[in-house]
Image (cartoon, rainbow, N blue to C red; front, side, top):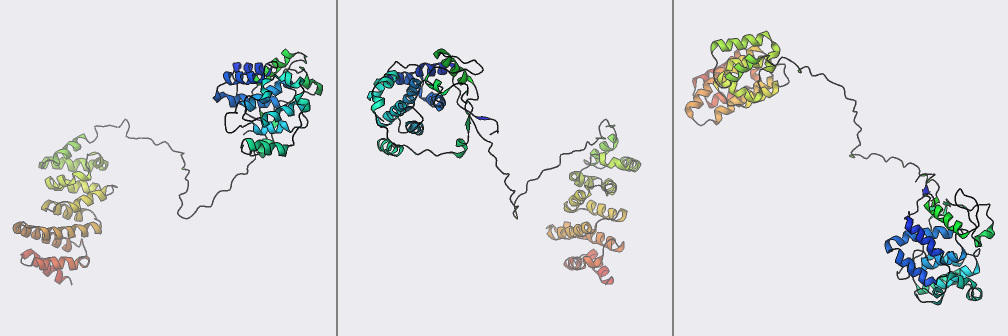
Length: 438
């Protein structure tokens, strides 16, 4: 809530404002008829808003004529007479015990409270003028607040209102005009906002109508000052709020407007190489094109998933491409595919040629050799098994003689392989080579 913002009061429609002023001015009508007229004019969902307006008019004794105040009290009391709880009981109790008010007004409110639940009591059969001029108001004995509360609570159980210190600190947005004497509280002398002082009942009604149209006729409250709560300590394992830096830099896309025909010929040849063997002239053309432009290998349409087809149909082209891709961030993907693809003469040829052309990672070479040995052990066809064992033995002898691998790193695994397939001549020769290197 802002420091200079008034406490809002429900806004009334123009016809509702006119209806309220008409009712409080009906001093000659019986109070019961005025209350019945009020209940007929305002539906239940609007009565709380209208009641708030009457409470505002009752806050200052200069706003309403004494007869109008009696009518307002009667409406507030009777509008909730059929309900178990009346929200205006605290206001009625305060008015009944207000020593600054006229005795007739206090006596009238006490009669309302004492006759709670009886809609046909005698006081409502009189008009406001008749009650003020009659003998009842002068002869009635006023009860103290304690006795009144006790006797009233005995007739109707009402909840005790919770006093709000913040509400108590508010001030009214409409204040009495100091130029109007207190004696005018019992007359019709009141000035409209911005107007001159008049002395007619019509001017009182127009002033009240203008005042009710103002948006700030509620209460002005103080600023609710609250200290900023301290930050809680971050616990271990608690997620921390991140404020990412969104200062992005613009990056230029150099591929825009580039020559898309670049590498068209090599892409066409690679696409054919994936489907079948290329002729010697076509293979030579691929090698020449890749030698001319080292970046062309990134535009030829090759991916790790296509490597097995290229190895089986054109192993020499595969060796050439892999040699050019050694510095590529995708080379690990190519090696992973090469290790786990089905073992064949062409795959071993590719690996053997790569070992002499470039420096391969030691982990890749060891993993490939282990995969070859495992493939020989798992194959069921004896003929194919003998054939693959011979290929693997020749492959391993080539790696050992060219000092591509350190025999001691794979000595136990290779020696067990040679013993398992010692019936094959190439395996026996590989075993003798291992013994000669000890």
